[in-house]
Amino acid sequence: MFSRPDFRTRCVRWLIATALFLMLGACVDKPNTLERVKEDGVLRVITRNSPATYFQDRNGETGFEYELVQRFAEDLGVKLEIETADNLDELFDQLHKQGGPVLAAAGLIDTPTRRQQARFSHPYLEVTPQVVYRNGQSRPTEPADLVGKRIMVLKGSVHAEQLAEIKKQYPALAYEESDAVEVVDLLRMVDEGQIDLTLVDSNELAMNQVYFSNVRVAFDLGQAREQRWAVAPGEDNSLLNEINAFLDKAEKNGTLQRLKDRYYGHVDVLGYVGAYTFAQHLQERLPKYEKFFKASAKKEEVDWRLLAAIGYQESMWQPTVTSKTGVRGLMMLTQNTAQAMGVSNRLDARQSIQGGSKYFAQIKEQLDSDIQEPDRTWLALAAYNVGSGHLDDARKLAANEGLNPNKWLDVKKMLPRLSQKKWYSKTRYGYARGGEPVHFVANIRRYYDILTWVTQPQLEGNQVTDGNMHVPGVDKNPPPNQQQPQPGS
Ligand code: BLG
Image (tube, rainbow, N blue to C red; front, side, top):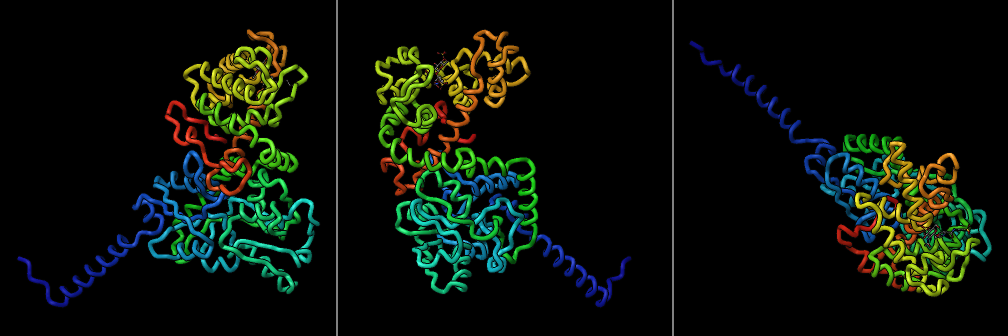
């Protein structure tokens, strides 16, 4: 028989039980930030709505930050929920809010002031602040030259902080901080001469240079800086550690580099002169032909910007060019192709665009049905340039090498072989200048990417073309069998 424990023993037991309960409770009740995100199944991220961060295009949400953070959410196995702040002050306010977004991904730089407001991740992008001016005006080369100029920068930006520093040394410096504009507005204002100077980060300029032909770099203002994600200051380290591991991995496996190339690589590929030239042609040439591209796009169910990109690659949107080999017109049709497409005058821009578009659509249609997008588009482009027979030869070479003949990445490795006797002597259609279609496709993809930027609804007001910057209906939600390739995919 058990005797009933005395009062003291009972008290001690009760105290131990309570303490255990409280300790367990503390563990159960207070999951860390990472656990909370996983439990909720949602990663709430705050960003800014701008071309360098997050915006909507015809395929939905996109942007450098968006794509990177989307991959992070995928890694965590949770849904991504994006919120946008109108300005940087609001962004940090939101990050501090209890129950608000847990992460800010908005091209942020960790200045000493900001380090009091948030904790920053490992860096993922290096950018240099640049003073930009209008071509034809005198070029400032140092901070002293900023005095007496009409300058505008984003309110609350690092650039505003930099100007405040310079003002200490040059009190006559005047500048306006605005929260009613975005970087593209500032660049446009410089381009059009409404202001003399602005400060932007090198990545944003690289991305936008292709549509502001008058904008030039005056000088780099200070050292390169690193962009980082930010989490609220009071939070534990769980989420930050996970973010850092993710960013390190993205750096190692090339994800970051691919994103950088897609978003900021235009100038690298075109060169600065190429980028200004492209911007000029966008303003001066494309508006004359845009309606023809759109009409043919609708008829052939192809994205008009892809057709326009072909036209730029072929002739830089010039209707009367002729190549050494007698190929002619805006879409560079051979005599045979023109005849087959019912084009009577290759130098007539409308006919050339119609014929070229029809030919491209036909080639694409005739490709093997098991070739999926976006490879289908890239392979059709190669055939437009080199001919379907030679493309088939390259696909066979790919298959013989154990590569995938339905993948552009594999076929493009084989195409240059068509100009080497060792290889072409064994093919059905023989010699071809196989390197040409590889460059052809790469360039068109680049122009297509750029044209996609330019026609974002969110850049409206930025009158690069005829002002009709809306995405045409045919591009908006193509039925699944007409899915357009994503630029850069
Ligand atoms: C293409 C034709 C294809 C043709 C190939 O040549 O022209 N495409 C068009 O006409 C749209 O039809 O294929 S084939 O019919 O199966 O033989 C091969 O002959 C045009 C290419 C040629 C290229 N540009 C469109 O991309 C061109 O002009 N190359 C010469 C440049 S230069 O003279 O050396 O400067």
